[in-house]
Image (cartoon, rainbow over all chains, first blue to last red; front, side, top):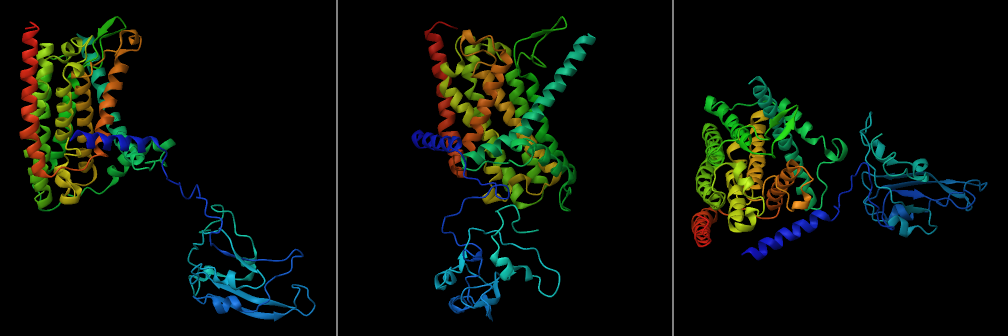
Length: 154
Length: 334
């Protein structure tokens, strides 16, 4: 009768002296896996030209249909090295399921996923309160902020 | 005469402040111990390492709405929380915290009232605790509190008997009901060494008396919502918890006095540390054991609780008394 009771006490005491697993979230961030699928980023090449040529493969493969692309001519090869860029590139994060298919579909490695996961946004004034979750090209091309510094609500 | 009055009042104030601080930080200790046992860290945002959490809890409870349900028996409903706090505050007065000290030419014993029947007084006062629970459960006029109150009445009567019998061995060995004399009798051998069974039974029965896990049937959350305090809110609710933790402090202090040698150091060469420090170390050791037990063991079923008390603990404690008496006769100590 006493054996199991004492054993229980031993186990609780052992757990009491081992450090806890708590992460004080808004102040500390847990390190996510290297291949974690967070917010997307649109890449540029070494000369700063956009890699995306608006082929539309990511748009086609996206199971939740959250990507919208309109292509645009770039005749003087100013912004790209193939003469075509995405004039309009939008990811709707109210729909995105972070499956990473877009990354796999892209033939030019133009879209990648980062480790950034603090995507919550305050409701926007105006017609669509979720408008803050529609990410446009300019925002997608920027590196995401450091976790915790500019995360979520602003 | 005047000096005596002043000294007594100062001692009372210090003791009251000490008990209330212990109660406040007892709640924090409980949550911290619970957290660490469950691989969490417990309260940590309020003040450095959560040290101001009791203050925040207290303020919150003060400002909560005090609801008196319309169907309650009002005078009794208000009386019950008062009865929960009063007994432990009365009981702590007879506990010797250390030997006398000399301050400004006065010899001051570190006990408010050195009663020669302190143990009897403690049990008389501790018996009042059950009234707060029974009255609270009855006055609430609601089924869960009533069930909690009734369970508590049966439980506390059963375990009070065992609690009383468990310390008889100590009283026989010390030959006195005075806590000061009992502590003096443990100068060389603590009674936990000569009365190990008595100490175990005391801890078990005290846990049951305090309505704490594994014997917290009166407030079993999963069965009775909250038990006897279901209908209480705000500071009235807090009073029950104040009472519970104050009772824990008293039970720990009594345990330290009766079994762990009170203010006596464990070894003679350690006597340069003041007795009161030793006493507090022992007090908090038992306090921690109570917390530790609570977060380790599951709750007993009600019939198991009763069986355990009447069929196992009671005969065991009687056996302890007979054995102690026999050994004492054999050693010609009577």
